[in-house]
Image: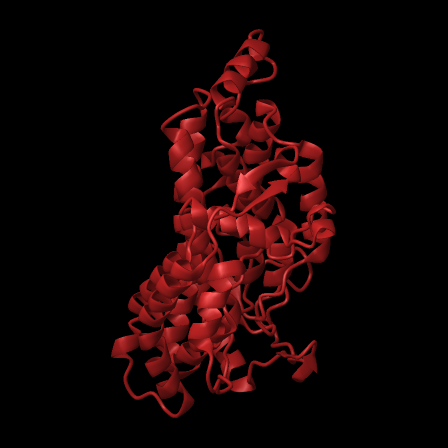
Amino acid sequence: MLGLQQKVVGAAGNGKQARCVKAAAGAEGRGVNSPLVTRAAATELPPRLKKPAPIILNNQVLHSITDERLDVVYSIADHVEKNVLPILTPVHKCWQPSELLPESSDPDFLDKVQDLRKRASSLPDDYLVVFTGDMITEEALPTYMTMLNTLDGVRDETGASMTPWGRWTRAWTAEENRHGDVMNKYMYLTGRVNMKAVEVTTQNLIGSGMDPKTENNPYLGFTYTSFQERATKTETATPNHTLANSRRCENLPMHLQTETATPNHTLANSRRIMDALFERDPNGAVQAFADMMKKQIVMPAHLMNDNEHDKKGRNLFADFSAVAERTKTYTAFDYADIMEHLVERWRVANLQGLRGEAAEAQEYLMKMPNRVRKLAERAYARRKANQHTDFSWVFNREVQLS
């Protein structure tokens, strides 16, 4: 999250920032069979791996989880097995990109493509920029799997681990992979965007990675994913709703409805993990929540680069975010709404018996949503109007930023 949203939330989070005592959210349990194949999967806890000692790298702490909270991670193996893995949709029940676009083997394939291109011909450039930025974010999926596998107590230690966490990470990634796939194919068929510029941006983004500042700590990691997935739902819902109600190929509405709904069960994954952490360790969970809010939640594509935008002295993600804000796709007010939703979801106001920094974190979280909204109102009133820049994604045409 850059630009106006970052300035607003940064201002809201200023002040003395007590270091939160963090916690983890992952348990290594080895199942005989994947629950995606059989519901009778047996789970066996392996020997617990020794956590690396905390270190400081690039001005942030790594492996910050305490041994006590790593035990909380291991304790929720059954919860992940019984309440998180079943959320995933079996492969045979999932839609596939080829079902939602013209079938290339059909005799009338070219006619269908021509119809698709005709329907997409009037899509405005600001819509195309937002849709393309979302698509690039989806296409950088390898980065997100890598991020999950940095978390202590959660990572897939072998690459094919049959622990609940290993199975969940791989199956979640496989489900998510369809989204960028179908969006990319659709935009290629429309002919409305510069696909080479898009592909360069995607390759650069995957190569650059992301820095969510989660410290190898699952408490922080799943706070981040709970927030970010809801932000993604907000951001994709607006342009997809627009397209679903106009200018699309005959099969696309099914995809768009699914695209909008799918983050709900992805969000349920992260929420159920955090639910367990709040239940078993409310002190650690609320501190982790506050810590991530103070750091600010950056969107996963914050390091995107098309090899062109920076030559003009501009930041591509900041300008993409500005277009998303102007079109009300995702704004600082949405950021505040998501924070408030999570405060209510995890019943932060009702947490009892919090100690020290946890009690301070509770007080901080209760005040933040309204503080962000007030700062957003001031920032919107001060922003410069009628700003434009060109985007390589739309063949260097100028798009309004504000």
